[in-house]
Image (tube, rainbow, N blue to C red; front, side, top):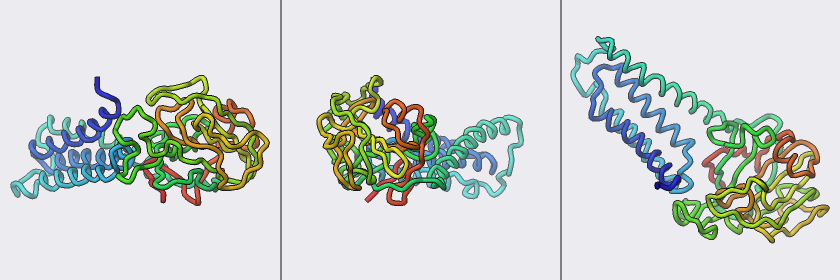
Length: 310
């Protein structure tokens, strides 16, 4: 059975490659055919380039392969390189059916592209926080105003949540694509710091690490700290057991260490989950399920998937 991480990589490269081979070897019979088939390849490749989930696993430099492949195939298959008498539109009904078959998925990918491009628009009421990690090469695994780049977006209390990871110097989040050792993940054990000055409302520090690829829906936040500041409550979740340095009632300053990144709770791999809700919420269930989400920026940036910071 193919591991899900490997399957994602195979599909990310395999499907655009199939489209490119089809466009290159089965030359367009008319300009409209070339236009729609090229548009499908380019829109799909750009969609994966911007919103793909595999780039932080294999290195973001690899996504340029898709763009080069799409552009090269589009240029190579251009009818201008063929007969000067190439028709503009199909001459038979079968050709029009083919155009429709290519137009529909192209419209879908263009629509999704628009969502990705607007997912980083900064909401007017966003609250600015400091980045809650003290390490280097911090990257965004989930974030933005679209379900395409942020799986939290459909949960009202977490719609502006961000999942942060870190990268090794080679640009990968872990030392192997589907490692089961949490120590292989660059972010594991990284200090978590307070993103604002305020008071700790609640903590938990006794949840064990969840095995990589597993889940713990009974304690979704795992080990966590709930921090109130400036009229909002901030949740920092999935911390290492025994790593918290604060308790409920502790006053903390911006940048003060709170704990370390782990993989506790409902988490498939080491990362830091952070989101904010309105008011002072000291109940973890309310903070993750019923409270009202507040949009947040970090040092002025509204984070979306595949962004790499400092």
